[in-house]
Amino acid sequence: MDVVEVLAQAPRTSVEGVAQAVQLCRDEPGQVELVVQCLDWPHAGVRMRAADTLQKLGEIDPGAVQPWAQLIVQGYCQADQPDVRWNLLQLMPIVDLDEACVHTLVPIIRHDFHHSTSRIVMACALHALVELARQHPQVQPVATAALQQALRSPIPSLAARARKLCR
Image 1: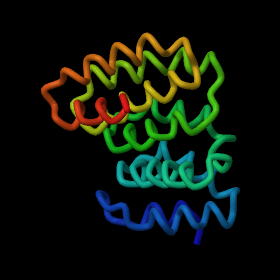
Image 2 (image 1 turned 45 degrees about the vertical axis):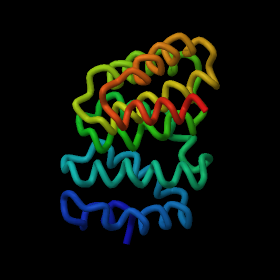
Image 3 (image 1 turned 90 degrees about the vertical axis):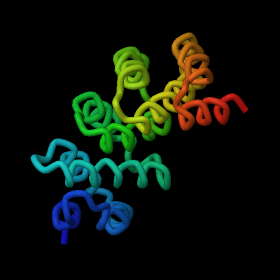
Image 4 (image 1 turned 180 degrees about the horizontal axis):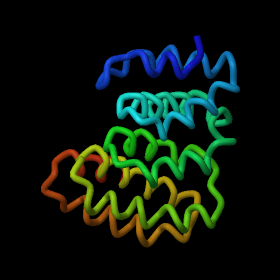
């Protein structure tokens, strides 16, 4: 069974199969490309599980997703699902991004921080901005402004994330 079948067979809103997909990618690195392609799959559940798989795989083995960094960024920029966006946002500080990519990406992350209807996306966007600023000094002013705004946020989870990031 390939990774696409694993991601496609679970119910729409279930993360069932993600652990199996991660293991398949670890055992057969060629499967990672298929997971990246699933970010553009017609079914929302497959896109969500693909993003979750990439996020979990990237945390375990950043090198496994690095060759696909540009496509992952593209997937994030094109995603309209909050669950896809927050999973891919968590990958942004993990993969090595060139300056041109960061220049394109930061305004989109900033927009998610300010305008997302998902509090999880907002918190992940804040975290991504702060982590990217540690790697790319030109992001620092945007990250500092977002952090200051989040510290004053009436959204408890966002303010808590900001306090944690300030430690």
